[in-house]
Length: 219
Image (cartoon, rainbow, N blue to C red; front, side, top):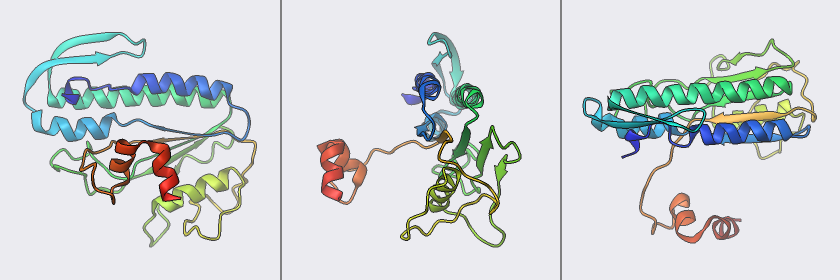
């Protein structure tokens, strides 16, 4: 019944992020996952034309109750995510921080797909100190990977990239990173239920045994 609660925990996360950003010392990296578009996109696909009661959370932690379809639920999930990102942006702007927004796949951008869409995923960078950096496009003739996201974050924070990393920074070579920056990354991804007894499934093992035992087992 996820689709009946389109905001999920979006505003709870956003308020927590805003507080953490206000308290963050220089050199802080934070990451938050706004999963509503992905989760609602998957679940609401089955109920696009169905009508039921939707419980829509507001930024003030109140609820609006109204009738709506699965399509309405998707729109409300996007509205919640958009508002949450705006809250985080405002907090980062006050600290002259850097915001990174990226997903690992599409979802609600193509509701004809039962799983993930096949569209390219943009990566946005907003640097409130160096406002020339707005959006990063693919390197010419190459497909970017998630490894490039990590390399870009290291570039911003002026941290040397490990030899094992195959990622390449998507920022211009003349971009001057600094260990004094506050960098916040927003990812837009959900999670999936699966066979928790499958030892090859990291998420399943973590859910069954607990996160810390899993980390110790892997490393």
